[in-house]
Length: 83
Image (cartoon, rainbow, N blue to C red):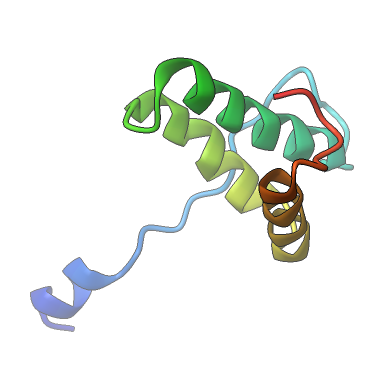
């Protein structure tokens, strides 16, 4: 592969272990990371880089359909969590 092709490839990462969610079922980890991302942005602003950590986690752990549904709920003001 040429270096131009390699530099354009995305780096794949998985969510790191979080001792608050030790089980194989990552549903709570997914949901909490999604909520934490939006809370972080609400408090610190959309340009605050450390918030991106939570986005990487929920993007890695959550099913895309959940992320889309929650995004629609946030826009409509019907999201079931407290952000």
